[in-house]
Image (cartoon, rainbow, N blue to C red; front, side, top):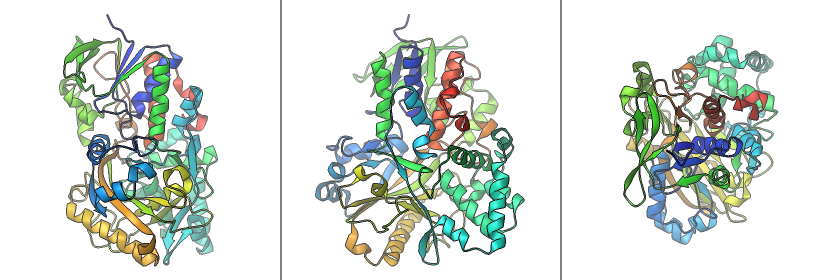
Length: 513
């Protein structure tokens, strides 16, 4: 006997979306079990209205739980940032850099709308590229090219736009650099689209980016009518990304479901070849068994061995799990007395193909791509009026196909932070006058899976477990397509469809199915 129709392991975005859809649209009694003290997985926010009284220790514990992140640098020391500058009382910070494809028209926002909810999103406007000592809109960069290169850029865009979603899967295991070189010999065009692909995938080198995935994402943006430079191609959740977790959690509880935090699952219970429940540790320290006819796992497969032995995965699937690696990176959070870039189109992303001083560090891509975003210029709630919250990002590889791991190289990380500050001081003479505070975290798990060749398409793990009945999977590691949180929305539709036998992708716009 069971008090629940569905048990969901993990309250990350995938688990919460599945739970909300099943609770409201199918009338299922849903139980979500979360090992951490708060819901949301990697989509956590801090500061008003998200626990402005959080302590330094609680914040660091939460970072470690959410994205295997930790603070690696702080100026001034972190305690001073909290006390003097009122970090969590005056600012809203996410665990990382959480933009999403198609901005306000992304897929988890479409699902929320189908559930009668609205996710507030502030579109970013502008995509600026660093060249000749200044940032220009990326369209302006191409406008300065010779006519033959401009024509070639349009031709490559046209050729790529004609590739259907089905046809794009032929390029899932082809790297984006090789794909571009198969279309053109114009190095300007290769570098232009290579940077855009790296930015979308969050990776530093187009040789490590899946061409198939980037083709699908780019075509989705085109069909959705969004544009990075003009607005809508990207966006941030107004008030912090945790708002998304709270909205889907509210749907679950409003429809009779339950979410229990500080309840780590110790084991998925299996009888014969069927998953029948879980053994969970309660917040009182006791262990008990809970049963349900459907179990949905939102734990990344590479960590699932803690609760489900390898024997339940065929060899091919175990090999896939062992080869999976997440997206990792160096994330900066900075408080300024005013924006350093002002004017129309400056509420978007600023990218540098080669951060000065990183050319000889041995990083993948021969030098680090560096991006920053004046987040509070897009979402005014993120910082006090008149001040600026800025996020920065550099990709670091946890598994390096060309050498040692980058995310575990503390000397490399320290040097990259120095180069970032060097760049800002040289680029902006007013930097020391407007800079108030800054800190950096290294995040080993920004996305559950890097958008890399060999991991995607038919190499993703299925939403239906291959050997156990009634066990399903969701999240950003399993069958779906798309970048990070937007892709999770697609995957949740596939998972719920597998549970119910219905097509739930109909909730999504045709270009996102």
